[in-house]
Image (cartoon, rainbow, N blue to C red; front, side, top):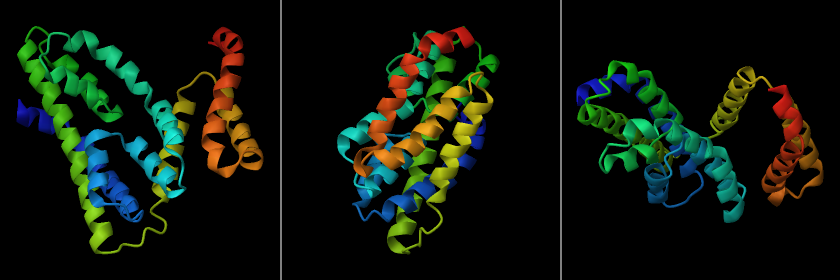
Length: 228
């Protein structure tokens, strides 16, 4: 079962190692203790969240704003958890770790290989879910560790590499835009972003922009429901 899970997670390995290395190099250039970077990979374990953390720490953003931004960025994981609750309800303690490690990629692998599992064999399914989650977690930790090592000891110049964050969020945004029936929230966000850069204080730009965006979307909720 372990070897089978390893084969299933190979595509994630190919993505997590280079992306983790990128995070590690960016983190090393913040000149913070290396073990905090590793700890974030172990405890936070969300690629987009950790890249966001690096960018916010680099601009000396407050802890409260970091917490709010991280929660809103990763709130989708709650819906991933809800969608597999029925699958893991008979698992042992491992189900809590599976829920913790339910990243976008892990969720995709779990659901993509679900059809090949015998739903009546709870033990086999539990091992498969656990191994997939654990392996993906290890890939990410290893990638981050390598990146931090390279950044700390070889003093790699991060110039240009920070663009991976912009590229990552741009790709995610465009993917969501293509798969969404409603395009208006995207346009609202663009206008609000430009408005915020001009009007909002730099240190509170992110938090104020998020709050304004939520307010506008709640106000437009009756209209958007009709559109869907």
